[in-house]
Length: 250
Length: 219
Image 1 (cartoon, helix red, strand yellow):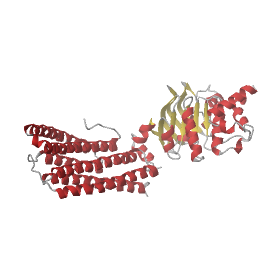
Image 2: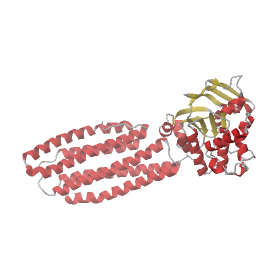
Image 3: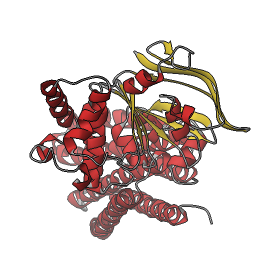
Image 4: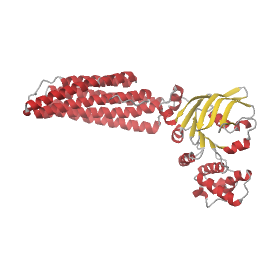
């Protein structure tokens, strides 16, 4: 079942068009990788899926993004609730300068959860789901800034999971991590896929081929090709895709 | 400077090695059948020795493919070229092994008078050699049409093999003294029939390089 359906989506930064008539559908509980050279529009596109672009001055968006059949750009959309449902992980881990516990409990608290027992349960479940619990269960009240980069990134994922999202947007989530931490995040993505719809932007094509079910190739604001990952990486239909994934440009 | 120039050169080197292996296999088959026709034991023995060079070259190709996959991490057509190239090298090396088997038939028959003039075996060998030549050209040109067409030539080999089988069976039934040599000749024709199948396998790999699709051309 399609979780996200994008139709004829254009995005302009002032006069400059950054996305050109994007059409794509993403299935529930699947991983879609967005690939393409720098400046191709993949991160811009990702940020349209939870209206993060609203925060950029001069942005104009035309077209439709529907999640569970609801147009997220409709006037009556509650953007706070949207971003609770569609969470985001960034390139560099950005934990709050608080304890591990407080980082994860922060989201549920601002959404109104005050019961301490309930908060502890959410923190434990979220850390377990983010495959971090065993590494931090004895240091929950120490500063999150003392964790390694890979642990911080998984903490940010746990922080995201704590507010009960349905869709996870990941913008190059491992580009600042070492190979072992990268592999842990990739394994985590494979596990999270059972519960969440995941869209990941990555410059690492082997990562895209390992973690995703479908891959979309962007170039100069156009969606050139989107297909089953194993097909796109072995026999792409478009020459531009072939040239890019073969390292002949970009 | 174009990107991945070094990788492109390495792919070209790999292709040249596969071509060399193909030409060596073709030569070995031609010589093996000559040794059988002319009952030339020295030639037959030289084929057995030469096979070691084919094995070494195949191992070299395998190592090159593994190294390129590990270091260049290819996708799409580049990946298909490496995977198919690796498989083609295995088929060619096995074709070399069958040439050795043909040479061993010559050695076993030795100078014993042939029970019949050899007509069909050189015909089969000629078709196999032609299939290899067309296959190697199609591999270089990445021409899946030529490869698929080449695979059709295998039907003629199968037809001849079927005729040889019937003829040798009759010879064995007529005179039990001929059974041993007739069996050797039957083996030889069977080896040539298998060589046709390997050519078809190579054609399938060329089609895979071209369009990424697996086709059964042996049907």
